[in-house]
Image 1 (tube, helix red, strand yellow):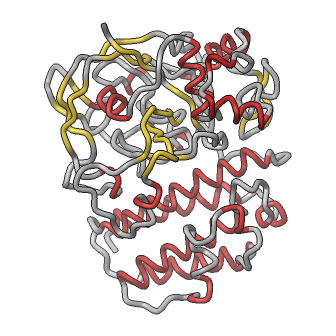
Image 2: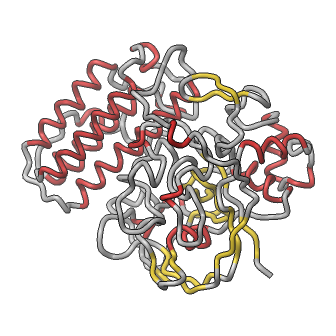
Image 3: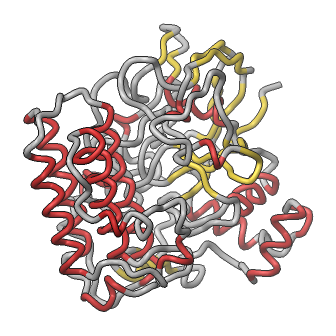
Length: 421
């Protein structure tokens, strides 16, 4: 295998295992929420996926554990069922991971092979899923792996997500280009005429959300869609999922004072929509979001990243590689500015959009239709931009995440938009 690919796969594995190194076996193996898999299921699934796509389909080797294909089939076994399955326990799951990786190391793989990239990205995405589980589990004494020094960002100014900046009208290439690696739902790239609009300079902050709560945001029926109000009433929701009170929130490393400068996190699409309505603004479409994140109007070119072509570094975006494990203050990373001036469009929190998840023109399922195609339709809403738990190996301005509008376990916030007269 090419050295670069070996390094990336090994680095991802080290970071995956570091997330759960301090988790007791009993906590690793049990169900913490019906929304999430047991943590150890994710480990076994990562191994089974790599064995299937690299060792078996790419390398021609027999499956190491063919009897476990059904157990670790993510499409056939929804999360709420996985706790009932005969999944491997910790020692066996870690042994499975190690054995599969040894088989893959023996293969001769090119550095540009799509299946290598698929397996790498798959593991990175499951690492974020595992962090979501750990956030819900709220395990006493669990700490993220050695964190980064964030003191350089401590003096960031207080921003508001309601500070809007203009984005001019343009005909913009939306989606991933034909060259390079991307998921099937990011293609084919197509041109969209985007009318002039404005978008939040930063995502909506905890300070913004505290004002929404104080204004009766969870009691004002007129600010909610019918479906959203029904969900709020049935679930008795009064604040973001991890707010302990209006002055404290639970983070991955425990309860802390509410950081008013940070983006609000753990809100669902219904909440994001209600907030926008309450402030006389709206959610951006995903085409608007991608335009704000990547379109350089002066040069009339689409950037690879908001800041240019340079791969993400901690000064650009707060991703899992930064090892912060929480959102930074909104607007803290000035070097990550998009051409329009928007800040923090990659990392920190996923951002809900107004768009339903659907196929782009000339869509072709790859490498299997269950990755994207079966989720197309009005049931799922698109999120963009990644979170502090997402990886630079996965998240780009064209990457499309999706989830149900009532889901709050994801590290999601919102950036608002408005029409320009």
